[in-house]
Image 1: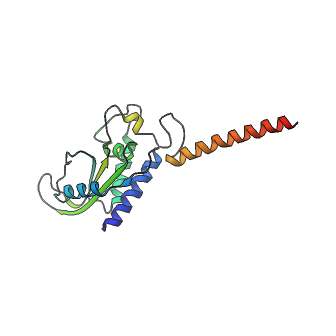
Image 2: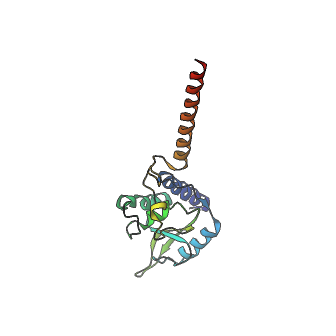
Image 3: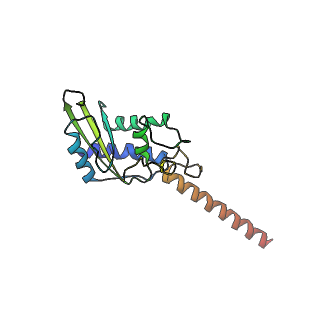
Amino acid sequence: MSSDSLQSQALNSTNEWRSRHMAEPVQWNDTLADYAHDWAKGCVWEHSGGPHGENLAAGFENATLAIDAWGNEEEKYNYKKGKFTEETGHFSQLVWRNTTSIGCAEVECDTDGDKGVQGKYLVCEYNPAGNVQGQFKYNVMKSGMDENGNPGFGSEGTRMRSSSRMLVLALAVAWTMMNLVV
């Protein structure tokens, strides 16, 4: 896959999931992509231990399918407890509100051994890193809700609530003006 295609798939899929969870879109970062590539080309199925947040996937046909698999971990996420678990860590990193940039790399692996990867291997790096203890309730929002329980969908939901407030204000002003005229 070309790096442009990977970048497009990674940004589109990631930002779609983030929008559902009241997180602003992330931007592509070439330094993170280079870091991801340096790790991925080793074809080792374990986290790099680096300074960024990191998600790994293997065996998916493309980045969109891998990222959707991470997002689908939401089914197991406990919003009431709001903490890290092994089964939902990819999801929580994906939608982590404080994260502002990502970089991903995909390589074809043909290795043997306990930690070797076979087939397509996707590594995505996130900055700032997510999954920070004590910060889950602010950074991982339930789909369609913000941290105050208000309905909305990402930045679009924020704009919709602002527009609704403006409409209510405009109607109140119009009603007041009508009463002054009468």
